[in-house]
Image (cartoon, rainbow, N blue to C red):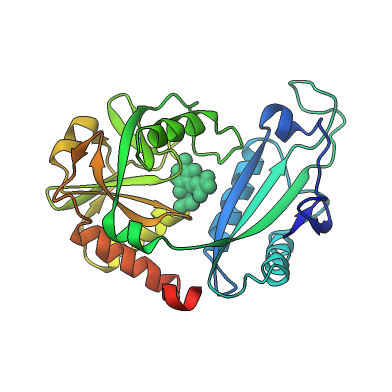
Length: 289
Ligand code: PDD
């Protein structure tokens, strides 16, 4: 597998960052995951805009005059040279504040940021999507700048591990009695025929897929409001679903061991999942293999 690191395309085995890289020492950086279908990126500019906002928010920039277009060209080359231009793939993109002797404050003078991109094949787990998944709830112990897609994912990692240990797929974070988002997804809940999801603010990531799904719901005439859902409302939810770049629309059919709705993916998540696949220009699974 060929990866990109600081201006060079090298094999993954050869790619190495200095031990003083601030991504390694502090989680000091941001990342993105972008989906590609048949060599075409889906919502790439939304991801790159979010990355730029994240970089600006933490006083960082892309290295050496690199532009959004430059990043896309690297990503395209990674798809091409790793034979990922047919079917589904993902691009992982990470920028750190660079390598410098360890100080909590920013390196002074500044050092060149580290830019790393890698591509990977992706398979839509059709059987899982058809069945739906289970989730657990977990206290949202994260910091209060969850709108930034930073490398600091320890709270997410621990919550996801808890889910896995309990045989579940996702951990749904609960802060002050309301659902915020999943460990790596946004969460939507259907109550009284209306979709509800936590509003965009500093307590969630403004998911790119979330944005597309909100648009699709409007197009399909499905009522949706950005209003928090209290954890006790889960018991009367008709449907719950997750969205994300590597999740698409995924129904949650059980939360903390209790069945959601009929225990099968509902009509709304199924319709939105279909509409998202269409928007993505998704190839049928058989053709993607
Ligand atoms: N995660 N919320 C969190 C905390 C996330 O980490 C993600 C994405 C999302 C969904 O955002 P989007 O639709 O833009 O992918 C919501 C990525 C895929 C990851 O960490 O691998």
